[in-house]
Image: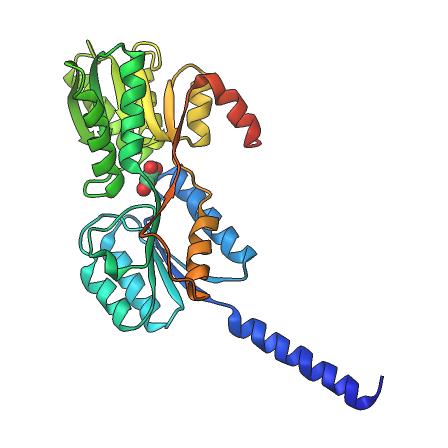
Length: 315
Ligand code: AHR
C-alpha cells in the first residue's frame, strides 16, 4: 500500500472514531430509589441496557425524595446532557423543573410513574397501566372469593401514580360486588418493612384478621413483609386469607410455591430497551411518539409460579 493511501486509511479511521465518539449520547436518569426488589431490578436493567448501547448514563438515586429528584434534574440540565429520563416519586410538583429543561432545550422522558404536568412538557411516558393492574387484581379476587370478601389493603407511597391508580382500579372492580368491601387501607410506602409494620397494626386492630378474607398490597415487597407479620401472628397467609399483590418479583413466586401467595400482577422491570428505543429514536429525529408508550401487564398464580421461576433461571 502506498504511503498516501495508508495515510488516507488512517485519516478515514480517525474520522470514523471521532464520529462514533461524537455520536455517543449522555442521558441523565433520576430514579425513585431502591425501595423494592422491582425497583432494584429496573435500575440494573437501565444500567445494563445503557452500557449495551454505548450510552453514558448519569444515574441518580433519589431515595424516595422528590427534592432529591429536582436537584438531580437541575444538575443534569447544568451538565447539558442530551436527554433526561425521570421516574418520578410522586405525580405533583414537576412543572417548574420541566419548564427549565424545556428552556434549556433538553428533551425529558417519563419512565414508570406519572406526573400531572402538561404533557407538552415531556416527550413521552413509557410505562405500564397501573389502573389496569388494580383492576386485574380486583377481578382475580372477585372470582377467587365468588364476589364475597372483606379486604385489607396496603397502599404504596402516598401521592405516587401506582398507589393512586392501583387503588382506583381495584376499587372500581370491588365496588361492583355488594359483598366485597375494603375495611382497612394504609400506606406501607412500597417497602417490606413498611408492609410488615402496617400488617402488624391491622392484625391488632382486627383481632388477628378475624373475618378478613383477603389482603391486597400495591406491591410484592409490602406483601412479603405482611406475610411475615401474618406468620409471626400464627396465621396461614394464602390459606386463612387470599393474598394478591403487584410486581411479580422472584420472592413472591417462591411464596406462591410455598402456598403463601395466591396471585401477583406482573410489572415488567426489563423495560430499559423500550425506554432507550424511544429516547434514541427521538434524538435520531423521529418525532411521532405516542404520549404514552404502554408496557403490557399480566397476572400470575401458583399454577405457573414454578414455570416462571425456571424460565427466569431461578432455583
Ligand atoms: O412505580 C412502580 C412501583 O414502584 C412498583 O410496583 C413498586 O414495587 C415500586 O416501588
